[in-house]
Length: 496
Image (cartoon, rainbow, N blue to C red):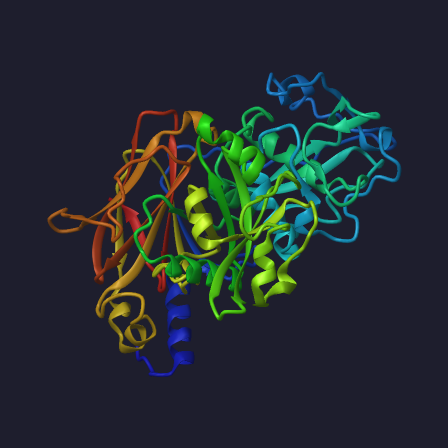
Protein backbone atom coordinates (compact mmCIF):
# COMPACT_ATOMS: atom_id res chain seq x y z
CA UNK A 1 0.00 0.00 0.00
CA UNK A 2 1.47 3.37 -0.98
CA UNK A 3 1.36 6.37 1.30
CA UNK A 4 1.46 10.06 0.42
CA UNK A 5 2.90 12.72 2.67
CA UNK A 6 -0.37 14.66 2.67
CA UNK A 7 -2.59 14.50 5.73
CA UNK A 8 -5.66 13.73 3.58
CA UNK A 9 -4.01 10.71 1.98
CA UNK A 10 -2.77 9.54 5.36
CA UNK A 11 -6.26 9.82 6.82
CA UNK A 12 -7.76 7.88 3.90
CA UNK A 13 -5.10 5.19 4.24
CA UNK A 14 -5.84 4.82 7.95
CA UNK A 15 -9.58 4.75 7.22
CA UNK A 16 -9.19 2.04 4.55
CA UNK A 17 -7.01 0.01 6.87
CA UNK A 18 -9.61 0.42 9.63
CA UNK A 19 -12.39 -0.87 7.40
CA UNK A 20 -10.25 -3.83 6.39
CA UNK A 21 -9.60 -4.63 10.03
CA UNK A 22 -13.24 -4.49 11.05
CA UNK A 23 -13.41 -0.92 12.40
CA UNK A 24 -16.51 1.13 11.72
CA UNK A 25 -17.89 4.53 12.62
CA UNK A 26 -19.71 4.76 15.94
CA UNK A 27 -23.44 4.77 15.11
CA UNK A 28 -24.02 6.95 18.17
CA UNK A 29 -22.16 9.79 16.45
CA UNK A 30 -19.20 10.16 18.81
CA UNK A 31 -16.72 10.38 15.94
CA UNK A 32 -14.82 7.35 17.22
CA UNK A 33 -14.14 4.21 15.18
CA UNK A 34 -14.84 0.88 16.87
CA UNK A 35 -13.88 -2.74 16.45
CA UNK A 36 -15.10 -5.42 18.84
CA UNK A 37 -13.79 -8.78 20.02
CA UNK A 38 -16.13 -10.75 22.30
CA UNK A 39 -14.49 -13.68 24.10
CA UNK A 40 -17.23 -14.36 26.65
CA UNK A 41 -18.63 -17.88 26.83
CA UNK A 42 -22.12 -16.53 27.45
CA UNK A 43 -23.59 -13.20 26.45
CA UNK A 44 -26.01 -11.48 28.78
CA UNK A 45 -28.41 -9.22 26.92
CA UNK A 46 -29.09 -5.86 28.51
CA UNK A 47 -31.82 -4.89 26.06
CA UNK A 48 -35.10 -3.85 27.63
CA UNK A 49 -38.35 -3.73 25.69
CA UNK A 50 -40.56 -0.65 26.06
CA UNK A 51 -43.34 -1.13 28.62
CA UNK A 52 -46.83 -1.81 27.31
CA UNK A 53 -49.70 0.10 28.83
CA UNK A 54 -53.40 0.22 27.99
CA UNK A 55 -54.48 3.50 26.42
CA UNK A 56 -55.65 5.92 29.09
CA UNK A 57 -53.83 4.06 31.88
CA UNK A 58 -50.66 4.98 33.79
CA UNK A 59 -47.81 2.47 33.83
CA UNK A 60 -46.42 1.24 37.16
CA UNK A 61 -42.91 -0.23 37.17
CA UNK A 62 -43.26 -3.50 39.07
CA UNK A 63 -39.50 -4.10 38.80
CA UNK A 64 -38.66 -0.93 40.72
CA UNK A 65 -41.37 -0.33 43.36
CA UNK A 66 -40.85 2.14 46.24
CA UNK A 67 -39.95 -0.74 48.59
CA UNK A 68 -36.97 -1.56 46.37
CA UNK A 69 -36.10 1.99 45.34
CA UNK A 70 -35.54 3.18 48.93
CA UNK A 71 -34.45 0.66 51.53
CA UNK A 72 -33.30 2.80 54.45
CA UNK A 73 -31.24 5.73 53.15
CA UNK A 74 -34.03 8.30 53.60
CA UNK A 75 -34.17 10.33 56.80
CA UNK A 76 -37.84 11.26 56.29
CA UNK A 77 -41.05 9.30 55.91
CA UNK A 78 -41.62 9.23 52.19
CA UNK A 79 -44.74 9.16 50.07
CA UNK A 80 -44.80 8.58 46.32
CA UNK A 81 -46.83 10.62 43.83
CA UNK A 82 -46.87 11.21 40.12
CA UNK A 83 -46.04 14.80 39.06
CA UNK A 84 -49.56 15.71 37.94
CA UNK A 85 -50.76 14.84 41.46
CA UNK A 86 -48.51 17.31 43.30
CA UNK A 87 -47.45 19.93 40.71
CA UNK A 88 -49.27 22.50 38.66
CA UNK A 89 -48.36 22.27 34.98
CA UNK A 90 -45.49 19.75 35.28
CA UNK A 91 -42.94 19.98 32.44
CA UNK A 92 -39.98 17.80 31.49
CA UNK A 93 -37.91 20.86 30.49
CA UNK A 94 -38.54 24.55 31.18
CA UNK A 95 -36.57 26.85 28.84
CA UNK A 96 -34.00 24.21 27.97
CA UNK A 97 -31.33 23.03 30.40
CA UNK A 98 -28.50 24.66 32.34
CA UNK A 99 -26.26 23.71 35.24
CA UNK A 100 -28.39 25.63 37.74
CA UNK A 101 -31.26 23.21 37.01
CA UNK A 102 -29.47 20.53 39.03
CA UNK A 103 -30.14 20.64 42.76
CA UNK A 104 -29.24 17.84 45.15
CA UNK A 105 -31.57 17.15 48.05
CA UNK A 106 -32.07 14.13 50.30
CA UNK A 107 -30.09 11.36 48.57
CA UNK A 108 -26.28 11.32 48.51
CA UNK A 109 -25.95 11.55 44.74
CA UNK A 110 -23.55 14.52 44.59
CA UNK A 111 -21.02 12.38 42.69
CA UNK A 112 -23.57 11.94 39.91
CA UNK A 113 -25.29 15.32 40.04
CA UNK A 114 -22.00 17.26 39.88
CA UNK A 115 -21.37 15.59 36.51
CA UNK A 116 -25.01 15.94 35.43
CA UNK A 117 -24.85 19.71 36.02
CA UNK A 118 -21.87 19.85 33.63
CA UNK A 119 -23.85 17.85 31.08
CA UNK A 120 -26.80 20.24 31.43
CA UNK A 121 -24.66 22.93 29.78
CA UNK A 122 -24.03 20.59 26.83
CA UNK A 123 -27.51 19.96 25.35
CA UNK A 124 -26.21 17.79 22.51
CA UNK A 125 -24.76 15.27 24.97
CA UNK A 126 -27.68 15.47 27.38
CA UNK A 127 -30.16 14.64 24.60
CA UNK A 128 -28.55 11.21 24.42
CA UNK A 129 -29.63 10.57 28.03
CA UNK A 130 -32.99 12.33 28.09
CA UNK A 131 -34.79 14.46 25.50
CA UNK A 132 -38.16 15.92 24.66
CA UNK A 133 -39.41 12.54 23.46
CA UNK A 134 -38.44 10.75 26.67
CA UNK A 135 -41.47 11.70 28.74
CA UNK A 136 -44.81 13.48 28.52
CA UNK A 137 -46.35 14.47 31.89
CA UNK A 138 -49.79 13.00 32.47
CA UNK A 139 -49.69 10.74 29.39
CA UNK A 140 -48.81 7.15 30.38
CA UNK A 141 -46.39 7.56 33.30
CA UNK A 142 -43.41 6.20 31.31
CA UNK A 143 -40.03 7.92 31.19
CA UNK A 144 -37.34 6.53 28.87
CA UNK A 145 -33.68 7.37 29.60
CA UNK A 146 -30.51 5.93 28.09
CA UNK A 147 -27.36 5.28 30.10
CA UNK A 148 -24.02 3.74 29.18
CA UNK A 149 -23.37 0.42 30.93
CA UNK A 150 -20.49 -1.97 30.32
CA UNK A 151 -19.82 -1.07 26.73
CA UNK A 152 -23.21 -0.13 25.33
CA UNK A 153 -26.09 2.28 25.68
CA UNK A 154 -28.99 0.66 27.53
CA UNK A 155 -32.63 1.68 27.72
CA UNK A 156 -33.87 2.50 31.22
CA UNK A 157 -37.64 2.72 31.60
CA UNK A 158 -39.03 4.12 34.85
CA UNK A 159 -42.47 5.21 35.95
CA UNK A 160 -42.86 8.84 37.00
CA UNK A 161 -43.77 8.18 40.63
CA UNK A 162 -41.33 10.25 42.74
CA UNK A 163 -40.46 10.26 46.47
CA UNK A 164 -41.74 13.19 48.54
CA UNK A 165 -41.83 14.19 52.18
CA UNK A 166 -43.93 16.57 54.24
CA UNK A 167 -42.06 19.86 54.24
CA UNK A 168 -43.03 23.46 54.86
CA UNK A 169 -45.59 24.40 53.71
CA UNK A 170 -46.44 21.13 51.91
CA UNK A 171 -45.08 18.13 50.05
CA UNK A 172 -41.53 18.49 48.70
CA UNK A 173 -39.36 16.28 46.52
CA UNK A 174 -36.92 14.27 48.60
CA UNK A 175 -34.65 13.46 45.68
CA UNK A 176 -32.93 15.75 43.22
CA UNK A 177 -35.01 18.59 41.83
CA UNK A 178 -34.77 21.53 39.47
CA UNK A 179 -33.13 24.56 41.01
CA UNK A 180 -34.62 26.94 38.45
CA UNK A 181 -38.29 25.90 38.04
CA UNK A 182 -40.41 24.07 40.60
CA UNK A 183 -42.42 22.31 37.86
CA UNK A 184 -39.38 21.03 35.89
CA UNK A 185 -38.81 17.26 36.12
CA UNK A 186 -35.82 16.12 34.06
CA UNK A 187 -33.34 16.17 36.96
CA UNK A 188 -35.61 14.09 39.23
CA UNK A 189 -36.30 11.54 36.50
CA UNK A 190 -32.65 11.08 35.50
CA UNK A 191 -31.73 10.53 39.15
CA UNK A 192 -34.43 7.84 39.39
CA UNK A 193 -33.17 6.18 36.18
CA UNK A 194 -29.66 6.00 37.65
CA UNK A 195 -31.06 4.60 40.88
CA UNK A 196 -32.84 1.87 38.94
CA UNK A 197 -29.72 0.96 36.96
CA UNK A 198 -27.72 0.64 40.19
CA UNK A 199 -30.51 -1.11 42.13
CA UNK A 200 -31.83 1.60 44.47
CA UNK A 201 -31.39 5.19 45.58
CA UNK A 202 -29.47 3.84 48.55
CA UNK A 203 -26.86 2.11 46.39
CA UNK A 204 -26.10 5.40 44.62
CA UNK A 205 -25.80 7.18 47.98
CA UNK A 206 -22.08 7.77 47.40
CA UNK A 207 -19.81 7.19 44.40
CA UNK A 208 -17.26 8.72 42.01
CA UNK A 209 -17.79 11.44 39.38
CA UNK A 210 -15.67 9.41 36.95
CA UNK A 211 -18.25 6.60 37.12
CA UNK A 212 -21.04 9.12 36.54
CA UNK A 213 -19.29 10.40 33.43
CA UNK A 214 -19.00 6.86 32.10
CA UNK A 215 -22.73 6.27 32.65
CA UNK A 216 -23.72 9.56 31.02
CA UNK A 217 -21.42 9.56 27.98
CA UNK A 218 -19.34 6.38 27.72
CA UNK A 219 -16.26 8.62 27.76
CA UNK A 220 -12.92 8.38 29.55
CA UNK A 221 -12.05 10.05 32.84
CA UNK A 222 -8.74 10.93 34.45
CA UNK A 223 -8.47 11.62 38.18
CA UNK A 224 -5.71 13.94 39.40
CA UNK A 225 -4.86 13.61 43.14
CA UNK A 226 -4.09 17.05 44.55
CA UNK A 227 -2.36 16.12 47.80
CA UNK A 228 0.39 14.27 45.91
CA UNK A 229 0.55 16.65 42.93
CA UNK A 230 4.23 17.42 42.32
CA UNK A 231 4.17 19.47 39.11
CA UNK A 232 4.00 23.28 39.29
CA UNK A 233 0.48 24.54 40.13
CA UNK A 234 0.45 26.56 36.91
CA UNK A 235 0.63 23.26 34.98
CA UNK A 236 -2.58 22.09 36.63
CA UNK A 237 -4.27 25.40 35.86
CA UNK A 238 -3.25 25.18 32.19
CA UNK A 239 -4.50 21.61 32.01
CA UNK A 240 -7.88 22.50 33.52
CA UNK A 241 -8.17 25.60 31.33
CA UNK A 242 -7.40 23.68 28.13
CA UNK A 243 -9.71 20.81 29.12
CA UNK A 244 -12.68 23.12 29.63
CA UNK A 245 -11.86 25.07 26.47
CA UNK A 246 -11.93 21.89 24.39
CA UNK A 247 -15.23 20.61 25.81
CA UNK A 248 -14.14 18.30 28.61
CA UNK A 249 -16.16 18.07 31.82
CA UNK A 250 -14.44 18.49 35.16
CA UNK A 251 -15.40 17.75 38.77
CA UNK A 252 -13.59 18.07 42.09
CA UNK A 253 -14.00 16.20 45.35
CA UNK A 254 -13.32 16.61 49.06
CA UNK A 255 -12.78 13.10 50.38
CA UNK A 256 -13.26 11.88 53.93
CA UNK A 257 -14.87 13.59 56.87
CA UNK A 258 -13.40 16.98 57.69
CA UNK A 259 -11.48 16.87 60.95
CA UNK A 260 -13.57 17.83 63.94
CA UNK A 261 -11.30 20.72 64.93
CA UNK A 262 -11.64 22.13 61.42
CA UNK A 263 -15.39 21.64 61.15
CA UNK A 264 -16.29 25.06 62.50
CA UNK A 265 -14.13 26.84 59.91
CA UNK A 266 -15.41 24.73 57.01
CA UNK A 267 -19.10 24.74 57.91
CA UNK A 268 -19.29 28.32 59.14
CA UNK A 269 -16.37 30.44 58.01
CA UNK A 270 -15.30 28.68 54.84
CA UNK A 271 -18.48 26.97 53.70
CA UNK A 272 -17.09 23.75 52.18
CA UNK A 273 -18.57 20.30 52.75
CA UNK A 274 -16.90 16.91 52.98
CA UNK A 275 -17.10 14.25 51.80
CA UNK A 276 -18.71 15.91 48.79
CA UNK A 277 -18.37 16.24 44.99
CA UNK A 278 -18.56 19.56 43.14
CA UNK A 279 -18.60 20.58 39.48
CA UNK A 280 -15.66 22.62 38.17
CA UNK A 281 -16.85 24.60 35.17
CA UNK A 282 -14.58 27.57 34.44
CA UNK A 283 -11.09 29.01 34.87
CA UNK A 284 -10.03 32.64 34.66
CA UNK A 285 -7.04 34.91 35.18
CA UNK A 286 -7.67 38.27 36.82
CA UNK A 287 -5.28 41.19 37.38
CA UNK A 288 -4.93 43.38 40.44
CA UNK A 289 -4.21 47.11 40.29
CA UNK A 290 -0.60 46.33 41.27
CA UNK A 291 -0.20 44.12 38.19
CA UNK A 292 -0.37 40.76 39.98
CA UNK A 293 -2.16 38.05 38.00
CA UNK A 294 -4.30 35.59 39.99
CA UNK A 295 -5.52 32.19 38.71
CA UNK A 296 -9.15 31.49 39.67
CA UNK A 297 -11.29 28.35 39.48
CA UNK A 298 -15.12 28.42 39.35
CA UNK A 299 -16.84 25.63 41.26
CA UNK A 300 -20.49 24.70 41.80
CA UNK A 301 -22.04 22.83 44.70
CA UNK A 302 -24.84 20.55 43.38
CA UNK A 303 -26.87 21.49 46.46
CA UNK A 304 -27.45 24.86 44.77
CA UNK A 305 -26.33 26.57 48.01
CA UNK A 306 -23.56 26.34 50.65
CA UNK A 307 -20.79 28.30 48.96
CA UNK A 308 -17.15 28.87 49.80
CA UNK A 309 -16.75 31.96 52.00
CA UNK A 310 -12.98 32.43 51.87
CA UNK A 311 -10.91 34.53 49.48
CA UNK A 312 -12.63 35.36 46.17
CA UNK A 313 -16.04 34.27 47.44
CA UNK A 314 -19.07 36.38 46.54
CA UNK A 315 -18.60 38.80 49.45
CA UNK A 316 -14.79 38.82 49.46
CA UNK A 317 -12.94 42.13 49.43
CA UNK A 318 -10.43 40.61 46.98
CA UNK A 319 -12.70 41.68 44.11
CA UNK A 320 -12.10 45.33 45.05
CA UNK A 321 -8.37 44.94 44.28
CA UNK A 322 -8.96 44.11 40.60
CA UNK A 323 -8.16 46.20 37.58
CA UNK A 324 -9.34 43.41 35.25
CA UNK A 325 -11.88 40.66 35.96
CA UNK A 326 -14.42 42.30 38.24
CA UNK A 327 -17.18 41.23 35.84
CA UNK A 328 -16.73 37.58 36.96
CA UNK A 329 -18.25 38.31 40.36
CA UNK A 330 -21.84 37.15 40.90
CA UNK A 331 -23.35 37.89 44.31
CA UNK A 332 -26.02 35.19 44.29
CA UNK A 333 -26.79 32.28 46.60
CA UNK A 334 -26.78 29.65 43.83
CA UNK A 335 -24.03 27.29 45.01
CA UNK A 336 -21.44 28.62 42.54
CA UNK A 337 -18.25 30.37 43.66
CA UNK A 338 -14.68 31.24 42.70
CA UNK A 339 -11.53 30.06 44.49
CA UNK A 340 -7.88 30.92 44.03
CA UNK A 341 -5.84 28.04 42.61
CA UNK A 342 -3.73 27.67 45.77
CA UNK A 343 -6.81 27.46 48.01
CA UNK A 344 -8.40 24.97 45.65
CA UNK A 345 -5.37 22.69 45.73
CA UNK A 346 -5.19 22.91 49.51
CA UNK A 347 -8.87 22.33 50.27
CA UNK A 348 -9.86 19.76 47.62
CA UNK A 349 -8.60 16.18 47.48
CA UNK A 350 -8.79 15.47 43.75
CA UNK A 351 -10.12 16.68 40.43
CA UNK A 352 -11.42 14.53 37.58
CA UNK A 353 -11.18 15.49 33.90
CA UNK A 354 -13.55 13.71 31.52
CA UNK A 355 -13.57 13.63 27.72
CA UNK A 356 -14.55 11.28 24.92
CA UNK A 357 -10.94 10.28 24.21
CA UNK A 358 -7.83 10.22 26.35
CA UNK A 359 -5.53 13.14 27.08
CA UNK A 360 -2.36 11.12 26.52
CA UNK A 361 0.20 13.84 27.18
CA UNK A 362 -1.78 15.50 30.00
CA UNK A 363 -1.95 18.94 28.45
CA UNK A 364 -5.71 19.13 29.07
CA UNK A 365 -6.66 18.47 25.44
CA UNK A 366 -8.00 15.16 24.14
CA UNK A 367 -5.53 13.57 21.77
CA UNK A 368 -6.55 11.93 18.46
CA UNK A 369 -6.66 8.36 19.77
CA UNK A 370 -9.89 7.79 17.87
CA UNK A 371 -9.58 4.07 17.08
CA UNK A 372 -11.13 2.06 19.89
CA UNK A 373 -10.72 -1.71 20.11
CA UNK A 374 -13.30 -3.17 22.51
CA UNK A 375 -12.50 -6.54 24.05
CA UNK A 376 -15.15 -8.30 26.15
CA UNK A 377 -13.95 -11.26 28.18
CA UNK A 378 -13.99 -13.21 31.42
CA UNK A 379 -11.25 -12.76 33.99
CA UNK A 380 -8.27 -15.00 33.28
CA UNK A 381 -8.53 -14.58 29.50
CA UNK A 382 -5.36 -13.32 27.79
CA UNK A 383 -5.47 -11.50 24.45
CA UNK A 384 -2.91 -11.03 21.68
CA UNK A 385 -2.73 -7.40 20.53
CA UNK A 386 -0.90 -6.34 17.37
CA UNK A 387 0.39 -2.79 16.88
CA UNK A 388 0.82 -2.67 13.07
CA UNK A 389 3.79 -1.48 11.05
CA UNK A 390 1.62 1.24 9.56
CA UNK A 391 2.60 3.25 12.63
CA UNK A 392 6.21 3.44 11.40
CA UNK A 393 5.25 5.52 8.39
CA UNK A 394 6.73 9.07 8.33
CA UNK A 395 3.27 10.65 8.15
CA UNK A 396 2.34 9.01 11.43
CA UNK A 397 5.59 10.00 13.14
CA UNK A 398 5.20 13.63 12.08
CA UNK A 399 1.62 13.89 13.31
CA UNK A 400 2.25 12.29 16.69
CA UNK A 401 5.79 13.45 17.37
CA UNK A 402 4.57 15.57 20.28
CA UNK A 403 2.82 12.63 21.97
CA UNK A 404 5.51 9.97 22.10
CA UNK A 405 9.22 9.52 21.44
CA UNK A 406 9.92 8.85 17.77
CA UNK A 407 9.24 5.27 16.72
CA UNK A 408 6.62 4.45 19.37
CA UNK A 409 2.83 4.58 19.38
CA UNK A 410 0.65 6.19 22.08
CA UNK A 411 -1.74 3.51 23.36
CA UNK A 412 -4.21 3.80 26.23
CA UNK A 413 -5.77 0.74 27.86
CA UNK A 414 -8.96 1.22 29.87
CA UNK A 415 -10.24 -1.77 31.84
CA UNK A 416 -13.83 -1.78 33.15
CA UNK A 417 -15.48 -4.36 35.40
CA UNK A 418 -19.11 -5.46 35.17
CA UNK A 419 -19.95 -4.61 38.80
CA UNK A 420 -21.63 -1.25 39.48
CA UNK A 421 -21.81 -1.33 43.28
CA UNK A 422 -18.72 0.37 44.65
CA UNK A 423 -18.88 -1.66 47.86
CA UNK A 424 -18.58 -4.85 45.76
CA UNK A 425 -15.82 -3.82 43.36
CA UNK A 426 -13.10 -6.31 42.53
CA UNK A 427 -9.52 -5.09 42.56
CA UNK A 428 -8.81 -4.84 38.85
CA UNK A 429 -5.88 -4.09 36.58
CA UNK A 430 -4.48 -4.85 33.15
CA UNK A 431 -0.91 -5.68 32.21
CA UNK A 432 0.79 -5.47 28.80
CA UNK A 433 3.54 -8.01 28.06
CA UNK A 434 5.83 -8.47 25.07
CA UNK A 435 4.69 -11.27 22.79
CA UNK A 436 8.03 -13.05 22.54
CA UNK A 437 9.46 -13.32 26.08
CA UNK A 438 6.38 -12.03 27.99
CA UNK A 439 8.28 -9.20 29.64
CA UNK A 440 5.93 -6.81 31.39
CA UNK A 441 5.77 -3.34 29.83
CA UNK A 442 5.40 -0.67 32.53
CA UNK A 443 2.77 1.98 31.99
CA UNK A 444 4.33 5.41 31.74
CA UNK A 445 2.78 6.56 35.04
CA UNK A 446 3.79 3.58 37.19
CA UNK A 447 0.25 2.98 38.49
CA UNK A 448 -0.44 0.18 41.01
CA UNK A 449 -1.28 -3.09 39.29
CA UNK A 450 -4.73 -3.46 40.86
CA UNK A 451 -7.23 -1.19 42.55
CA UNK A 452 -10.89 -1.50 43.57
CA UNK A 453 -12.44 0.82 40.97
CA UNK A 454 -15.10 0.54 38.28
CA UNK A 455 -12.56 1.53 35.65
CA UNK A 456 -8.82 2.05 35.38
CA UNK A 457 -6.72 3.74 32.69
CA UNK A 458 -3.11 2.89 31.76
CA UNK A 459 -0.85 4.71 29.26
CA UNK A 460 1.83 3.07 27.13
CA UNK A 461 4.38 3.96 24.47
CA UNK A 462 4.58 0.84 22.29
CA UNK A 463 6.71 -0.03 19.30
CA UNK A 464 4.91 -1.80 16.43
CA UNK A 465 4.76 -5.50 17.27
CA UNK A 466 2.84 -8.22 19.12
CA UNK A 467 1.83 -7.91 22.77
CA UNK A 468 -0.13 -9.90 25.33
CA UNK A 469 -2.95 -8.12 27.14
CA UNK A 470 -3.62 -9.59 30.58
CA UNK A 471 -6.71 -8.20 32.39
CA UNK A 472 -6.55 -9.19 36.07
CA UNK A 473 -8.92 -9.33 39.01
CA UNK A 474 -8.48 -10.01 42.71
CA UNK A 475 -11.35 -10.63 45.13
CA UNK A 476 -14.81 -9.11 44.57
CA UNK A 477 -17.80 -10.38 42.61
CA UNK A 478 -17.03 -9.06 39.12
CA UNK A 479 -17.30 -11.84 36.51
CA UNK A 480 -16.42 -10.11 33.23
CA UNK A 481 -14.20 -7.35 31.91
CA UNK A 482 -14.34 -4.83 29.10
CA UNK A 483 -11.01 -3.52 27.83
CA UNK A 484 -10.98 -0.52 25.52
CA UNK A 485 -7.72 0.09 23.66
CA UNK A 486 -7.43 3.67 22.37
CA UNK A 487 -4.89 4.33 19.64
CA UNK A 488 -4.27 6.72 16.73
CA UNK A 489 -4.43 3.88 14.19
CA UNK A 490 -6.19 0.50 13.95
CA UNK A 491 -5.00 -2.21 16.36
CA UNK A 492 -6.43 -5.73 16.20
CA UNK A 493 -6.51 -8.59 18.67
CA UNK A 494 -7.37 -12.25 19.10
CA UNK A 495 -7.57 -14.72 21.96
CA UNK A 496 -4.10 -15.75 23.09
